Length: 311
Ligand code: FAD
Image (cartoon, rainbow, N blue to C red; front, top):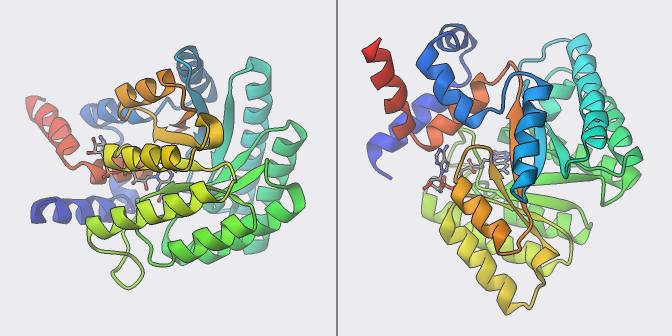
C-alpha cells in the first residue's frame, strides 16, 4: 500500500462517521450506483431475492440489516422486531442463511443493559428456530463489552446459536482467540475495518496478515466451527494449506466473504466443496458500511468521481 492509499483510507474512514455528509452523498446517483454493488437493497425483500440467487449458486448467507444510526430505545426495539421478522422470513423461504447484527443497533452506545436485553431477544428467537446470530465487531472502544455480551448469550443459548467476531488488526486478538476457543465460542475471523490507533492495532498490513494466519491456526486447532472471513487469496491459501496439513475435513469451518466482493472466488471455493457464506447487508442506512468498503479500496472512489464529472 502506498502513502496515498493510507491517507485516503484514513480520510474515508473519517468521512464514514460524518452524518451531514451522508445526506448529501447518498443522494448522488454515481454514489448510489456503486453502493448497489455492495448493498443488496434497501428492503428485506430485496435482500431475500439476493440470497435466493446466492443459494442457487451453492452459497450460504448471513443477512445484516444495516443501522448504526440508532439513537433511542424505541429505535432499538424496532431493530429487534425487524430481526424477528427476518428470522421468520428465512424459515419461510427456506434459504441456508443466518443473521449478523451489531450491538450498537441494540443500543450499546447509550445503554449497555438495553443492548444485552435486545440482543437476547433476537438470539432467543434464533435459538427457537435453530438458527444463529453473529454479533459483528465494531470499534475497539466496544471490543470488551461486545465480547462480554456474547459470552453472556453463549452461556444462556449455547454454541450453535450465537458467535463472536475477532479482528486480526487488534493486538489483543490472539489472546481473545485462545480464550474464546477454550470456551467453545464460534468466531468469525476478519482483518478489521475501522480506524484504530497504533496503541491498539497493528499499523502495518503485514503484521495484520501475520496475525490473521496465527489466529486462523488457533481457530482451526480448536475443533469448534468457525468462519474465516477474507477475500485475500494469500489468507485463503494459508487456511487451505493448514487445514490439509491438520487433516481437517472440508466442513470443519466455513469461508465468509462480503456481498459483491470476489464473486469468482466465492463460487470457486463453493464448487470445490468448501462451505462459503456471503454476508448480505441491506437497509436504508448503508452509508457507513459502504464508506468502509470504499476505504478498503480507494480505487473504487475513482468510479464515483469519473461519473460525477460526466454529470
Ligand atoms: P484485504 O487485504 O483488504 O483485501 C484482499 C483483496 O480483497 C483485495 O486485494 C481485493 O481484491 C479484495 N477486496 C477487499 N476489499 C475490497 C473492497 N472493498 N472492494 C473491492 N475489492 C476488495 N470487519 C469488522 O471490523 N467487523 C466485522 O464484524 C466484520 N465482518 C466481516 C464479515 C465478513 C464475512 C467479511 C468478509 C469481512 C468482514 N469485515 C468485518 C471486514 C474485514 O475486517 C475487512 O475490512 C475486509 O474483509 C477486507 O479485508 P480482506 O480480508 O478482504 O483483505
